[in-house]
Image (cartoon, rainbow, N blue to C red; front, side):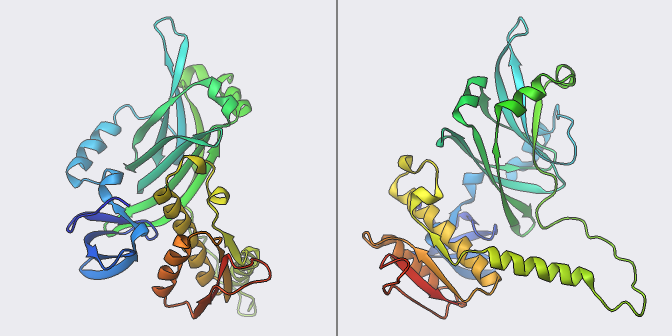
Length: 325
């Protein structure tokens, strides 16, 4: 993690909150002031807010600049590919953009892969109505399995909330189908929908008042069934070996690897707590124990954790931590 100075504005990855950095408690723990309250976090869960370009002085300029010449798109969040032409009209390459047609302002963490190898990484604020340029694209890249990976947070007055992710695989068949369509010459762009609505923020359905003798609350039953199904589908373990988590692991340094592993673990732990799973396992291998030590530091700071141990397990051997919730 990049050294953060006291007083710097920081972004909490797991919650999406913004705060002011107060200092380091130890090698693994930092203290952040959020709305006047000091809270502790694992050091890998906090990054400088400037990494996302969060500067209030630039927001109005950015909004005015990015809303000029907006591409007309339906409600939602879109990946748009616009042809860049030579003087004779021949397409030379394409400009890739992400276009926000949601009412919410977002923070975005974007990674572009070719053949499972990272090509571009962009962290930016994405205002409502904005068109943000990402990078250039050529059609020969379609042979290299291009993947656009997005992580978003909804930005609000308190910081940001409601993190969600989406991965788009750009396939040659879909790409050329849009290029060869009758609409392409007029609109002059290709678009892929990232999301139509922010996950978890769908419009509420109005339910008419039931008759007195209708005592079945089918809406509540369905909601409960979905929770049970989601819990049943959740595995009781997570394999934190980096090759299981990241497509381009060979290019990562040790710090980046540890950061990714801990982010995945924290998400898995949060999900287990949410669904009241009583026992889970984190597979970290034996190695030098760096990952295991940092997992233990997270567990010590999580009140829902009843106990944990690194005893031999018939399924995972000595390379896993058993966690009781």
